[in-house]
Every structure is written in C-alpha cells, then in structure tokens.
Amino acid sequence: MNELPRPVVRPRRLRTTAALRRAVSETSVEPRQLVLPGFVREGASEPRPIGSMPGVVQHSRDSLRAAAAEAAGLGLGGIMLFGVPGTKDATGSGGIDPDGILNVAIRDVVAEVGDALPVMADLCLDEFTDHGHCGVLTPSGAVDNDATLDLYGQMAVAQAEAGVHLVGPSGMMDGQVAAIRSALDGAGHLDTAILAYGTKYASAFYGPFREAVDSSLQGDRRTYQQDPANAREGVRESLLDVEQGADLVMVKPALAYLDVIRQVRDAVPVPVAAYNISGEYAMVEAAAANGWIDRQAAILETLLSIRRAGADVVLTYWAAEAARWLRA
Ligand code: PBG
Image 1 (cartoon, protein in one colour):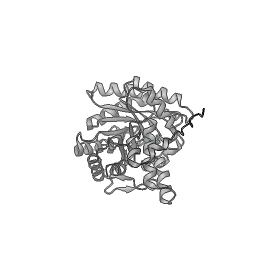
Image 2 (cartoon, rainbow, N blue to C red):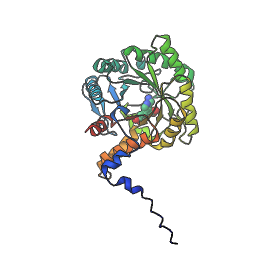
Image 3 (tube, helix red, strand yellow):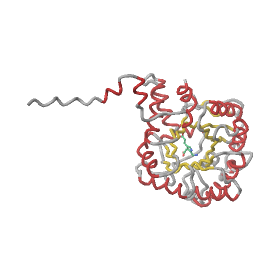
Image 4 (tube, protein in one colour):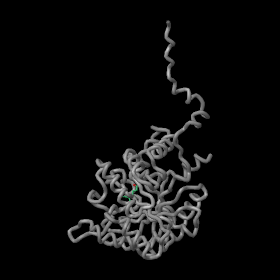
C-alpha cells in the first residue's frame, strides 16, 4: 500500500494578497497610540531647528500651540511637553515657578486643545538645573534622592494647576511616584494622572535630546538611571511604580529594550508606554538622508516593532507624520 504524500505546510498561503495579509495581521499602529514630544524654548519668537534631530524643533509658544492643535486634529494619544528655560539654577526652580516656561506652555496648550488631546509634561529637574542632573545635589555632589522628592511634589502641583492631564516623572528617584501622588492628592488634584517613566536606562541614545534641551550635564546619570544589562530590575522598577500609584508605566529607550517592554507588559496591569527616543530617531533620519534605507518603511517598521513588543502607547518624534500616513 502506498502512503499518501505528506503535504507541504504552506504558511505562504496567507501572504498571497495584500488584502489577506492585512486580514491576518497581528499588530497595528494607530494614531491614538502615538504621543508627540514637544520642546518649547523660553523667549523664542521662531521655532529653532535641532541639528541632531532633523525635522524636530525647539518651539516658540505660538508654534507649540499650532503643533498641539495639529496633534489633536490627527487624533494622537497625547503631547508630552519639555521646557527649555532661559536661565537655570542649582535647584531647578524654573520647573516649579508657575511662570516658568514649562508651566506657561502647559497653560497655552490646554487653552488650545482643552480635553481633545491628553496633555502630558516631563516632570524632572534636569532641564532646569545648571548642573544638568535630575535632582538636587548634596555638598559632595551626589544626587540627593529624598530632597529631590520634595521638589518633584511641588513641580507636580504646579503642573496640575496649569491644567496638565498627566505628569511624567522621569528622574528615577526612589519613591518619586508615591511622593508625587501624595502631593497631588494633598492639593486636591485627584484626577491628575501619573505616567511614570518606571523603567529607564542610562542610555547613550539620549545624546540628541541633550542638544534639544540645551543640557548642561557633565558626566552621566548612572547612579539613578538603570544599568542596560538589567531586565529583571527593569520589571521591579515598574512594579514598584504601580504599587505607588502610577496610572501608566513607561519603558525607555525602546529599540534596544524591546525584551524589557515585553516583560513589563506581561508583569503589570496598567497600560505600558515606550519612548522611541532621540537617538533612535536620529539613526533612522541619518541613514535615510544618506539614501541607505527607505525612510517611511523604516519608521513604520520601527513603530510596529515597539507595539509588537507590547507597548500600548508609543512616544515618538514621528507621531504626527506617521499619523498622516496611517490615515491616508
Ligand atoms: C529627562 C529626560 C530625558 C529624556 C526624556 N526625559 C533625558 C535623560 O534622561 O537624560 C530623553 C528623551 C530622548 O532622548 O528622546 N528629563
């Protein structure tokens, strides 16, 4: 008796037409999942290009409002604001001052978009300190964790009074989410949410961001940001933030940490964001400018990979442009 030939298993069958590929696709990128970071420079009357991030600018107050209105029109998931102050000091007081550039920009943007776009703000001192660290320093020059918590609480309240929907603590001080939650609650801001940069690594890929915010940092942030070797510790950090009341947690950077995004997604019950950071942006832009890769395809594949790793929300400098492609 002849045996029947064993059929060749053909996964390619599901790839034969574009419509069929679309029907069985496992992951999508949608405008609502993308958050646009925006830099605003105190005293600027025109937007100023950032050399290492072609296509990204330090906004004037007016151009930031216009960018926020466009983001709302595109149905983005939010705008994340960063301030570039005219003067800096040892304690980063410009971040807490209600008339500081970041708090002024929050008011501007909220006046522009209302509740049509979630408005988020970086909650960290590094843009406002003359030494460039994310917290205040002890006399010997170490970053003082607990003294910094008090300032983060004040900064959170200032951002909430300006109308922000979500504060984004990114300084990696221990206990920062609990301190911020209790400061917000104590001032009656029960509905202001916390998007915690829970899992954040000391990364070389932040390089272009330091130009974007005119950072004065000497040295590195390795006593507070995490060691790139540690994934388990990354999960622990986000779990601690959830325990302290984080409403969303973030993994940052994204591309060199896709495994960490997956592990955090599987470990926490809250939405997970990932930050497709400045160096990841600059690499694609530089290669595309040289004609070495297909820019649009590389950007969409990048965003898809971060979603596939498990991010519910992606912060990306391409948010508006990608949303236009996705809606077309
Ligand atoms: C800290 C902060 C940084 C970024 C976002 N928030 C820089 C750092 O930790 O050194 C980096 C974002 C990017 O590189 O795109 N306020």
